[in-house]
Length: 491
Image (tube, rainbow, N blue to C red):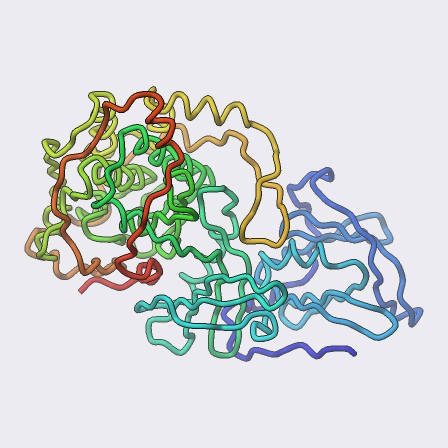
């Protein structure tokens, strides 16, 4: 039976006047395209003809009779699985009511393209269960995939909300689609209905780094291993030209209860690097976890993520104590803006403390980049492990129903961090005006202050350290880890 396309009268993904097929050249080599044959209906011959179609990422292309290729970027196009009697299963791809349909062995194509496209019929594929997180911009629900009963997380945006920002959501989706790293969250599918937008991701039930950072005695060896995972993931993110802008313990999630299985999540405030240092929502982040130049209205670049990662490093080395966060919200903002850090709480080796100070340098010009941190001698053995696996290999992807190839090759963060503008176009703000932040800022956690305790940094023998290398720990989840997935504007 031939299914009818579902029409959404208020789609946020519609691009007016865009053509389906493009005739200009595209910068993708022939070797990158995968070719398969499918059945296409011929209006001239009134029958189905077997023709080739090629795919590379979100790009599909076909060859015309004159030998020239036309191509289409299916990003944010509507994709549907269809079936016609006596023909079989097929795919329908729609862009601004322009449609291409083809039939045959389409399962592999659907699996690859659904990451880039928008689907409509979420209720046919998923059971929407209980709410596990909520915020000012989105709610998060636990959902179950009907085909295999696997659980996932669905970040749901209400299109009728006054705070619904379609431009930010489209950017978040576009950035998530580019993520393909073991320690970075990735987007599996996107759905849109008349009222909602759904982002399907892996479900994380082991909590966040924030849940354990103040009550778990990590050794320095374990801390360095966890920090390398975070730094390596940020290096990958930066290599894609993206600044995360909200690195904090709440956004470091656990796949399993150990520091070898952590990943960076929540790209709701992420943006593409701008050489002028100007961004949509220029001042954004979570108070107490931001680089000072953001609160001082200065131009900024990738190094703000280096600073925020340094704050995580500080908290891990000080048993959860933040250098800025106190009970009073306004005082937290002032502390964060001034950027003064007391290192007396840090119980670590000289080498680790030196790297920490380089990451938390208040002057962004002097601050080390993420790539500088990644290749610090402290992480030498972890870099050696990365070099050994510099090749394509198969990694188990827990978010999918089968194994999937994932690249583990070396990638470079921008080698020379762009120079900070000395005369920013934004005026500096006074301390007494911090309460008027006209920006997009995360809400503070209800428990703002953790009691400082000394960090257990060392003294373990090799046998004990080897045991600790992959040790699991009990995570007492204080709040839903999905509470921080939705942003709130500053008061």
